[in-house]
Every structure is written in C-alpha cells, then in structure tokens.
Amino acid sequence: MAALGWLTPRRRSATARSVLAGEASAEAARKSSQELEELAHEGAPEGTEPEFPVIGDDKAAAFFDLDNTVMQGAAIFHFGRGLYKRKFFETRDLYRFAWQQAWFRLAGVEDPEHMQDARDSALSIVKGHRVSELMSIGEEIYDEYMAERIWPGTRALAEAHLDAGQKVWLVTAAPVEIATVIARRLGLTGALGTVAESVDGVYTGKLVGEPLHGPAKAEAVRALAAAEGLDLGRCAAYSDSHNDIPMLSLVGHPYAINPDAKLRKHARRLDWRLRDYRTGRKAAKVGIPAAAGVGAVAGGTAAAIALHRRRR
Image (cartoon, rainbow, N blue to C red; front, side, top):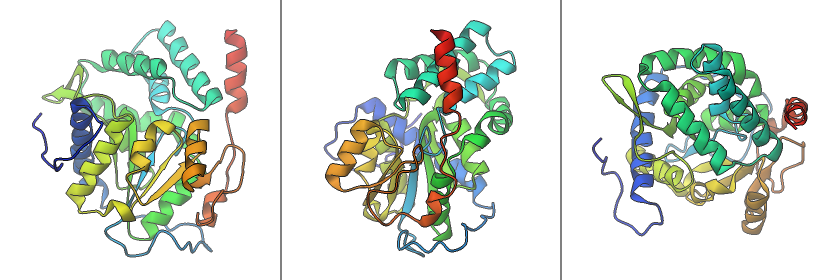
C-alpha cells in the first residue's frame, strides 16, 4: 500500500509502522465516510445549548475513542463472541475472549498482552474470508452485543458536535470494518480503525502497519485532519485511556471520559474536562453539554464480576 503523503516532515516519537497504520486508517475512514454522509442525523435532546462545540465551525471536528469511551467494554471481544456464535472458532477460544473482556470491564484499562492476543486471534480467524462477509456479520453482531452497551452520555456528546455541523469520527484499535459499522449505526461521519490487509477483497491474515493504538491513533487523526483541512486547535478528542494521551494532546479540546487512573491524573494536572459515566460523578470542569449526563449507568459490571468469580 502506497504511503499517502499527507504528513509534513516533523519530529515525532511514532514509529514508521505507527505512521503507516495511521495513514492507512485515515484513508479507509475517508472512503467509508463518503457512504455515510447521506444519512440524516436526528437532533440531540431538547434543552441542550452548550457553548461548545461552536455551531458552524467547519474547521473543527471531534474524535472519539471507542472502547470504554463510547461503548462499555472492548469491541473486538464482542466481535469475537459473535464470530464464535457463527462457528468461526472453538469453545476454548471463546473462554479466552470472555476472560479478557471481563478483565477489561473490571479493571477499566487495556492489558497490552490481552489486546495483542485478541488481535492475533482475530487475524487468524478472518484469514481467507471476504471483507464483505465480515461487514455483513458485523451488522448482526452490533445488534446482538453492542447496541445496548453504548454510553448514552458519550453519544450525546457526539450528537452535540453533529448538531453543530461538525464531523465526528471514531478512532479505535478495533478493525476498521467493525468500527465503520458502529459509526454508521450511531449516525457518525466515519471511523479510523486498524486496517487488515486484503487482496481482491479477501483477508490475508496480516495488518497494514500496526494496530491503531497509542501513537498510531495520533498519526491517524493528524493525517485525517490534514486531508480534511481541519484546524486541530479547534477540534475535540475524547478517550478513557492514558494510551490516548498522544491523540488527546493534538487537539485544542481534550476530554477524559471514564478515565483510567493515569489519564485522570494527567487530565487534572492539565485542567482537561472530565466526565465519568461509570459512577455518575459530575464533570471536573464546566463546559460539557448537559445532555451528556442523561442515562449514565454502569450496566454489566455485575455480570463481569460473576464471571471473574466463576473463573477463580
């Protein structure tokens, strides 16, 4: 895959593979968004008139992490559960997916070994399958396992940006095909996600670059902003993880949503806006739309604890 050439020379800590992953994800996101732009967007709840985002600012956009920010848990684990139901892999693999998902829900942070294991498993599972097949299955899996796990508060934040006339993108380490399905179902502009290599519409079992994680997310946002003519200083980004500090630091309006301990500490030190939908705690800084507080509940925690106890 040819480099996109959107990035200007600069000093950066990202590796060449991070840059490749970011650029590949940005290219895939722009292609998918062309199909989503025709979808009409329903308005945000009445009575919401936040000072931010600025209505009509076409140089601004919003970038949302997916796992534990927009959705409870990790998308790739929900996807794995759906693939198991369709006989893509065996029972022992399902147990591993279930334990990793329960750990993620309980700890609220990403375990690099768990995430790498999940990605390697997913790549081996989809190898030889058509991209169109996985997209179709992704639609079904969203309805079965993901739709009810969307945080209403974070969704309201995204809708506030859409109502202001701004584009809203998911940015996630999950496969870009699944991320695109979720973005479309939520009425968002599109998604930046991990790009799996395909030849003639068939997965090869390899990645383009590396998973869209950490610095690679920042590279993807930077590349997409350049291609879209956005001013990152007027853009917003939302995440729960300290791993996304590079992405959050790119924009003028960073938000910590359901933050892990490291991100919470970092956000407080830099006076970033905070919102935690797991506990209903108020924002640490004013300026978040009031609609974001609607329906903020931590569903599914009891089930995760029960699974953890059974596995012990």
